[in-house]
Amino acid sequence: MKKWLPLIAALALTACSSSDDGKTYYQLPQSSTPAVQAVSQPGTHLLWIEQVAVPDYLAGNGVVYQTSDVQYVIATSNLWASPLDQQLRNTLVANLSSALPGWVVASQPLANDQDTLNVNVTGFHGRYDGKVIVSGEWLLKRQGQLIKRPFHVELKQQADGYDAMVKTLAQAWQQQAQSIASQLTRIN
Image (cartoon, rainbow, N blue to C red; front, side, top):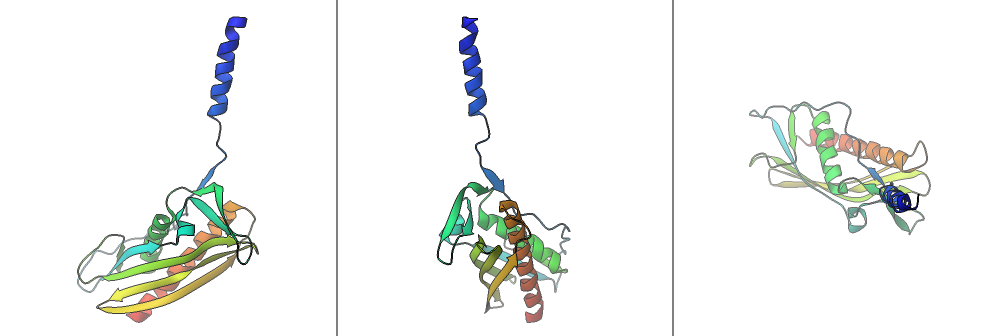
């Protein structure tokens, strides 16, 4: 029996070391309706989402939660599955593609005469009062002209916890994409 004890101890240690590390990873959900991209023809609007930038406090892996009017906590166990700026850019391309039929929206340069959109996100976090905040500004370069617009979206979470917070953040980001699309069509 004694010769089996080291083997049992080794198996127990192996089982403990391979257990869950207590971290949860989040990815923003994609739009449920797939976008059908228009084929670029003369007169088709081309939009390049050049960059979605986030400040340092949002650029790390941790999901951010505001605990008071001046204090923020960056989670160490609730993490973004991929960099937040990439997730925001990818979902913005998908959401604008759905909201702008007849436009070609891409994350890569399309042509010399394309419109170029840059977004600076300054807030993308949950807050102590049960709301999420999505804020910043976007800058559109169209035919040598620059158009700049601020944005601020606050939505109430429907449930507690990080899952609900991430889903509400995604909903707020989608609302902001709809607002950008609406403004782009008016600028035309």
